[in-house]
Length: 297
Image (cartoon, rainbow, N blue to C red; front, side, top):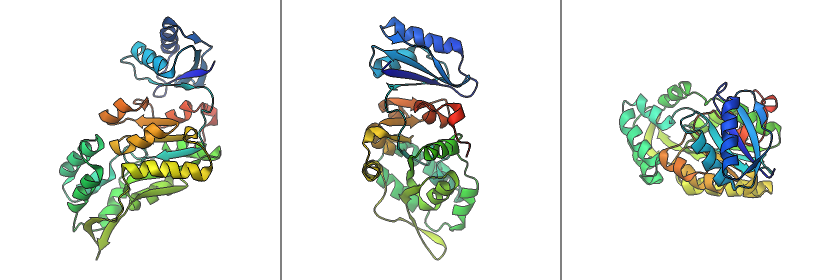
C-alpha cells in the first residue's frame, strides 16, 4: 500500500471499533485497505490504504469519527521518518505562553494574554504585538523571569519526542517567538540540539521594555527551517515542524510533516495535519515509530 492513515488517541482511547469505522469509511469511497497495524495498544494504529489521495482519506476519516477524541494523519508510506525537527515552544513544548505568565508577575496577565491570543490567531502583526507586550513589562525586575520559569511545565510527550528523534539521528531545534531566557532552559531540559528565539533587554536588574532586533517571527521561523534543512543536506520533505500559532503556519506548511498541535483556529484550519487530542508522542506515531521504539527521556 502506498499510503497510510494513522489514528492516534489519548492513551487507552483508541478501540478496534474506531479503527474499523475508519477503514469502512475509506472503503466506502473506493480505497483498498490493508491489515491495521497497532503502533501502541489502544493508543495508535496505522491503516494502510491505496486508491485515494491523502486529503480524501483524511476527510473521510474525520467525517466517520466526528466527535471522537481521535487524531487522523493521512500521508504517503515512504519517507515517514524525518531527519530534522523544528518545534515552537509556547503552548507546544511547554504548556503555557511564557510571556503571558511573565506578565502575571507584573499583575497584567489578562491584558497581555488578550493581545497574545489575537496575535497567535493571526489577527495582529506578530512583531508589532510582541513589541507592544514587552513594552508593557518595562521596569519589571528580572527575578520575575526565574519565578516564571519555575512555574513552567513541559507538554506531555515533549521529552519522548526529542529523545526518540535524536536517538534515530535527527537534528532537533527549538525555534520560538519567545525569549532566550526560557528557550535555553527548555532546550537543555528537553534535549534540543539548539534554540533560536528573541532576547529581552534589561538594565540595572529590570526589563527595559524592549526586545533586541531582529525579531524572530513568522518569516524567520520558515527561514530557519530552510537553513537547517540545507545544512543537513536534506529536502523539506524530510523535515517535521510543529506549532500552534499563526507565526508557525509558514513553517508548518513548508515541512514534509507539518503539524498544528492543539492549535489556534486559523492554524488548525490551514494545516493539513492536526493533533487536537493526543500528546506530542503523536508526532512519533505519525512517523511510524512504535511504542517500543520511544525513548523515555
